[in-house]
Length: 182
Image (cartoon, rainbow, N blue to C red; front, side):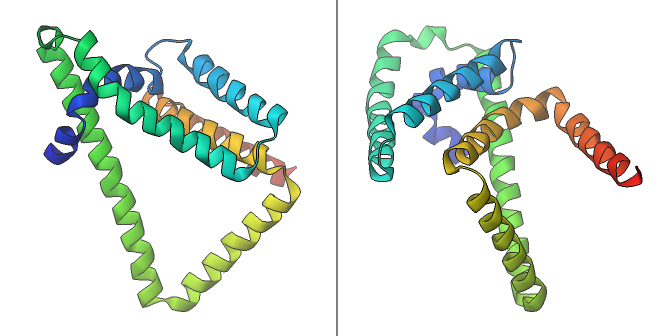
């Protein structure tokens, strides 16, 4: 966590508002997230750029942000503006992020463990998942799939923070079981 916090030092003034948006600390933040992603994907749909162009533009924007954010934040934000409350919030963000990274590493380790201990089950599971992905990919437009995936990733922290994730899972489970009984 300390290493992660050290890496985010020059980004700390940007991370706090981004965290606030991702955790929906205001009621209109989910609409903001969906509006921004919808605008970007609408432009991609209208302009129909090549895949290489999309990747290049994304990496160009990322490089500019990476280059410009640290000096701009050091100019706009003074050292006196950083309070103990903001530091506490940054520590909390770093703890949550490091816990998520550890969960992903544990999941990866579990997959490797299953591959080594039960290669037949691993192979069957991977083949099943990939065949389902192939079927979904051939049925649904790729841009729509990517739009849904991006919005899901961006809205998931807010769902988890607000406790809506479990209620959504419960709703889907109840709906599926009710549909089977009917």
